[in-house]
Length: 274
Image (cartoon, rainbow, N blue to C red; front, side):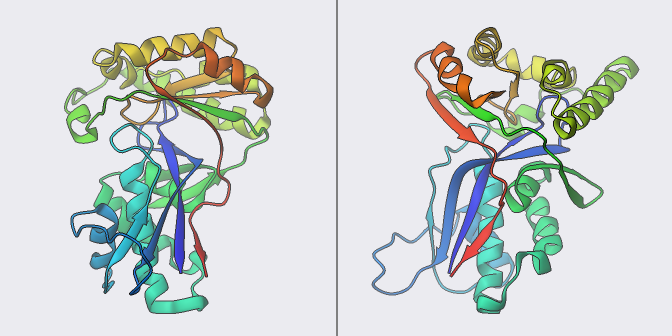
């Protein structure tokens, strides 16, 4: 069996550690068999670590186009893939994702340290997560997702050390309001509200201070007609939403010396393929 898991973009601006979006860029994991010609993943790989944590035996192979350390949820997708591979090894063709989703979410979140990326990779679409639960957000639009992915990397753990231990009352209210507006705008298809709805005061400016190229990429995308954009996870990648017909123009406006990915929202989430 092969486990296919989408990449993800976390936070979506104001929804720090609470919102995630699955992307049409997929990692695949499988239990290696003799003679399959696939390279075995190292035991230190996050997919293998997750696989072993659930009792998986044998070697794993991992095939991933998701760049590491860029804000596209590589480690979260790998951990979801490893856990589902262990379940697939145990249950065989009888495995249904819905039967194990709650356990996979809990285990992957514990390994990852937060749930936004793993919830999106597991369930697909746009996901709100809190209190150990994940709920799909209805989406009334089907945008293009144009990603600006520079060659530099960011450590999520190190990036979090730049964030202060407290926030002001005004900033808390600002982000709560924007997060609620974002969920409502996606559900209603109100694209005119998305730019304001993806504003943030908790983390983006502090992270942009160390990634000026990311700030310029976001501004360029918005000037070129993107509906909205945000620092993807802890960065340095930037995610933008736009009408599919405008994806080429938005991509062309982004700063050079970076990988530009024209993606969509993955609505399927992690799947086990026989």
